[in-house]
View 1: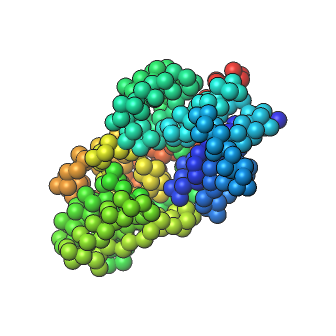
View 2: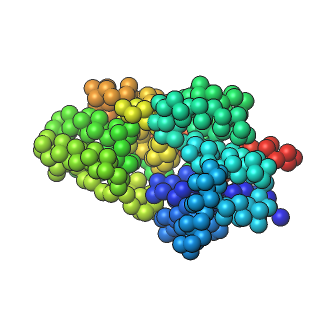
View 3: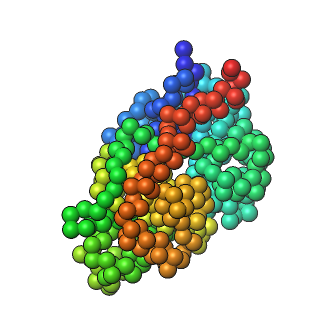
Length: 383
């Protein structure tokens, strides 16, 4: 019988949560269950069993919230599920839920892992009260997984014992991502893709400015944006970008889509020639943490990538081999790297093959989930 492991994440799942879904669905020696407050995007990420607090009747849901708030611990339903399934290990996704879930770890004597992804560490770390809470959490929990060296250094610097912090690369489902050597389209058309949430750390405005500088020199280039978010702040960022596009007279050179189902997004990768990921450190301290998974998805598809020297992005993009890396917020440098790929499409197949090979070595979900199960084994003392 497979050993059960509970995954705590909210919601299940965000529209961009493919990397968590890939972990759940590729486990082979462990049987995953999910604990969440609410269910989202089940059509894109079908999974069972998912135990959602919002699925309870209003009385039980209200009682659970009251209990959690009064005791400062957990939802009683979560404890009931963990006891029912005899779960020995709880895997929390994002620091916020790791901090909340440590009370379950202590109450049921569970082993506990938390994976950090970015804003859950970088944006919160500017607050002294949060840093003290994190320091206590770091002593009480068992293990922390991070995407790369920059994130590891950040977490250790906040007080986590270095022996508890493990670099664990996220993975992509290579069978879902079609590899295709890239070459310009009809009439030499070149499609540059930017994708991600409309938030400051994604740096989309810098990407737009770099594209605008090149648009008149290279009439064959087109910018394909898949950018969206529902927050008020994201709406402001979106409006600023749309205004820039109108004011600069490049509306006919830019297409814009909101988020779409994951399968549809994967289909859109096939028409991209270059991927642009201009991430930056946000004014509120938010950062990618590791790097956007979109980088390894596009590399797996054979698309050369232009990104920034931000957090762990230089681990995902091998500069001069799978793409180019520019300094953060440097529009001149970003445009320079982008122009080289526009002007030299002969580089694309070589970069694409190197990118696919890099993902196969370091970010193949099959390999990475095997490593994750080895981590579980180590915590549980399984040989």
